[in-house]
Image 1 (spheres, one colour):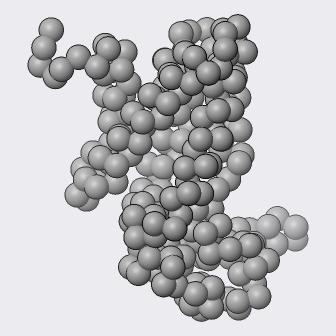
Image 2: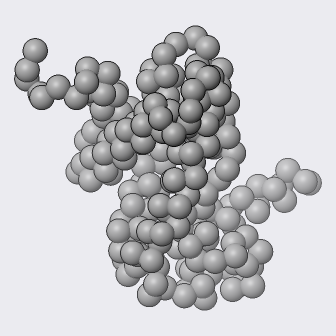
Length: 198
């Protein structure tokens, strides 16, 4: 009985997220109401607030558990390999989940593009995540987090974002996110040499 109730809650949450994404991808989240999202999901406005405090929360649907799993993976990998490949490997958790849910991610990126008001939150969330990851690496290396750890986390974050944009904008899912991330990290490992040069 509990399992069925949990499944029903997850289905309702997913329906609200999907509705927010579809509507925001069309119009931008600033031009969508909670009532419209709720109606699209087939629930009441009151039900919406049982799951999300704001429209932004529904659109971004941030799950701290995913980030925590990535950090646990990175913590386990750092003693076994250099930092750059450890970060690359730790991202596999995200990559597999994103490739399995490509349509939702593409909608989310379109919705974010049409909703500039989300940028401060996204920047703040990204900066906080990078800072915490840099501290984790700094603790492992025994160095100041503001130096090499901050640099490697910032650069790998940029590489991942470039791969993500290429993947999301490729027609009909023609490109693999995993392959694009591999390509980006290979370029980083080679010192960002110009393509085609030895």
